[in-house]
Image (cartoon, rainbow, N blue to C red; front, side, top):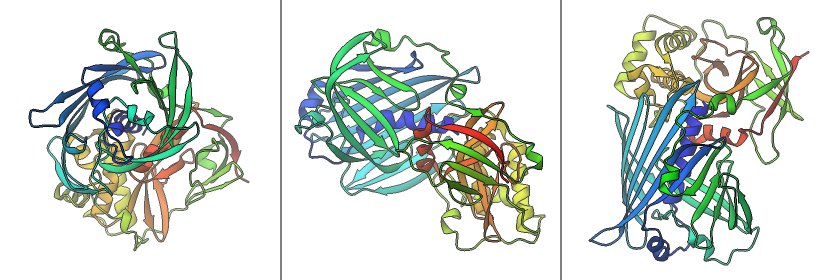
Length: 475
């Protein structure tokens, strides 16, 4: 699950600043100053593992074209995986978006998107190899685009502690979002990677509960940017930014959560207690379905399986919908699902069959992507996100309400961020994990969010800040 969060957050760090659409901003000076190429080195655990190249070019017909290229190398289970992103955006003289092209490439995954703006609507199409979808995003105003020079933030006589909101369009998840920015003041800042002290304007931005800090010089140029996922973006000359460590620190172990305490025999346990240490500024609805949460104590109850004749729940419209990434209405998905369940009569039998089929037919490899059911069915490769997206699409296509959930699960002394599913039978949500072929999922699964990428990204706010103590069987 963390791999999708990384990919999405990486894209948001790159792109959110290019799709700003409020504040009364006039960007001509910022664009003029930002026409030259600029580079940002991308660091993780003080190792440079990638870079970003920015360029702005004038058009003969007026306006500008904004180009951005990013390269990132991630060490996942001691294997190196490259990610490449490219953005091209055409802007008017007043910096309004006209149209854009966006692409993301990683092993086993490819995303290409094109968008055209009509008023305050973004009409876009996206292709993940062989599969193409089109949709419309309706915004409250025409989307504004900022350059990598952010001196517009310094033109409003900001006072320390002042806050404002910026809605923006995110081409990675193809959705409109809103961030809150707080001005922290003009202060001395040590850039450890360079061993230098700068006097910089400090801003803190909150996106989907995730806090990102960025620092501007007096001209509005980004000098440094950090996120809780461990990324650090640092302004550097080209020769330094592109000098990459191609196999840096292994990321999954770096962001996992050490388990405090030990587990009882889970095969003999019907419920288990945990003590969670969650920062006060983060909110999750932990008290739902098979979980109860009071005063930092979480109890997870293993579900009693319904009888074989159990019926699917009705009225769960959101868990039956086809979406851009869970394409349950696609004929390829529907035909595959029918071939799996057509010999079964009862809904519970169908759930078991779908669960086992996804487990048995997907090769379990990291895929740095936005989880996509149709692409996963085609490639039959994926990590927990791809398993969960594909199961949800298959289940929905045969009228079984299904959703994707995310949180953590235990493995060899650590809790790792993970995604799995829930289905609704006899009025109750039942957990299942197609990565592990578990129905229901074992008691080490702790759910923090439910929903697709826009919800799962909230997990990023926990990275490096969550503590879990196993208290034992609930009595």
